[in-house]
Image 1 (cartoon, one colour):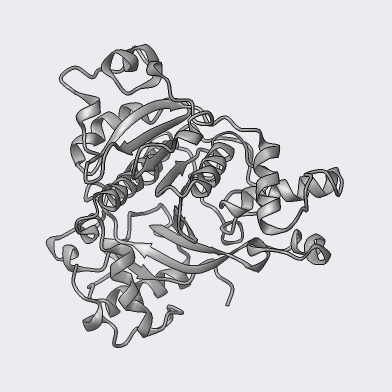
Image 2 (cartoon, one colour):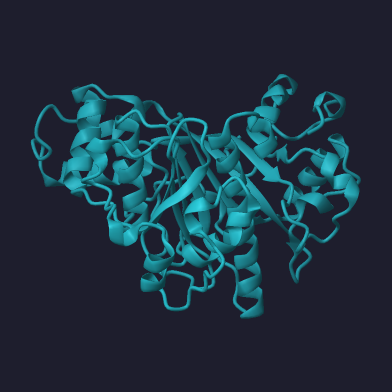
Length: 381
């Protein structure tokens, strides 16, 4: 990707300092930027795949079904608020757990890995009679390669998680198990977080049931989900907690049908989410200014499509950091801190559309443009 140095002059209205843009290469250069790190290369490519599969393709599924796409309002971007319980069947889901090494042995009791759910041709036929996988060796596919996309499209609709591991240092990231259940008591997960952060001293219910309910909501918020999370979101949070505690290098990728966003959890300090948003007039003007400042003729490379009201639909990325209440508490402050937000927005971006299939104005010159533009949308001034 080209350097951003030549595109900095004249940038206004983004809320970013020019000195920050050296970090963009590290965040957004894509799979090629990972160099010799095969795990990062595979992870980045899978995220790009999910942007197309779970967000862009889902949007057009809504359009074909003549259903309104459930865009999130700005006020609902920061996790912690409840989301509608209803699920949108036109939204493509995904639940992937990526490991840079085999699953740590102490965690095998929590991750249901059996011979019966190994990714083999025979097992996959048992999970779904509709799976046609002749001429494919699922265990030989490298997830850093687009050759794995076809099989992923067939596996992702299956229930529970898909596990991918690197069997040995320097080896490729490959599919290991599907239909992986995460088995852990919610109370144990909440207690562990409460002890780690100082919100409880010993027992989970030492301060009563209402206190535990508040702590449970914050457990899910800690991992980027609303306080009433359940199902796959609960499993993703528990998987991330256990893998981090075990010192594993991992990534959890989750795309759900209720909030239509992709959540990325890993062993780092930042939680990243991706979603489609619809821009109003002021936002559209901001995007155009920023795109031109970075060398684009217009905002076409950053626009999935324009809707019936001519509003741009774009891919939005938001990065969250854990706020002070999520980094520890004194017992005397615990009640107050459980009422405060545990996540705060640190960065927002509009992404260049990664596939040409649905882009309204793709041309060869887009390849030299930044893959992400700094943007201010949900963060309060």
